[in-house]
Amino acid sequence: MNRIDELLGKIDGLEKELRVELRDVTNDFLYTVQEKKVRFSSEVRAAHREFAAKWSDYVYDSGVWVILTIPFIWMPIVPALMLDVSVWLYQLMCFPVYGIPRVKRRNYIVLDRHSLKYLNYIEKVNCFYCSYFNGLIGFVREVAARTEQYWCPIRHARPVKSVHSRYRHFFPYGDAEGYRKGLSRVRQEFDDV
Image 1 (cartoon, rainbow, N blue to C red):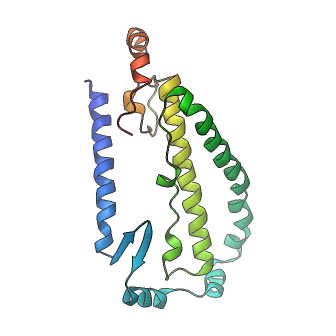
Image 2: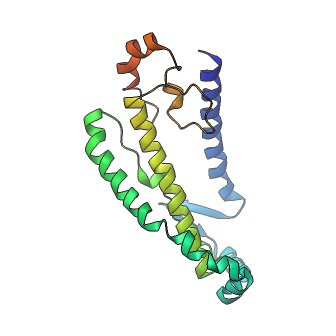
Image 3: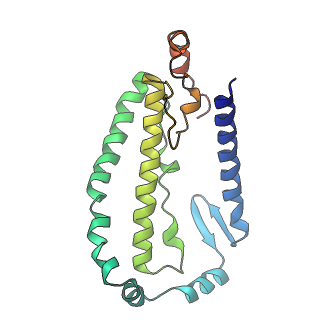
């Protein structure tokens, strides 16, 4: 194992550790997750309502320039929905043919912030949009990563800003022999998903 593989393995381990820590934070803020539903005690819900801002104050405090940006924020929703449907159909039709395990959309698109009583209606809509859009990007990235692992599992020559979850399975740039000898093996290395 070379240094790059070692570092990618550490990153993977740290990401798993982070997910555990994020799950454990539930105790600090007195909520539980039961059957994918967030549950707060009645006392916590009442305390949260005390922190809710009136939507009219929220809009007023935002200012004119922020309000004028709203159409630009919401413009990508139509292409995002089209991307969502396209990627869902793509993996539904192609992944079984390639033998790639399907990506569970629900693991990436998590819509739970509407349960927070300290958010007003506008904040909840904004949180819904951001959760959907960022979750969608994560979902699409994972589908693309698994596709890349199947079709072109070669690392880049130049460093990339952020590597996806499958990158550690890729061949070093320029390793022609390793690529030819190991491509069929790498195309099936999905035991970790």
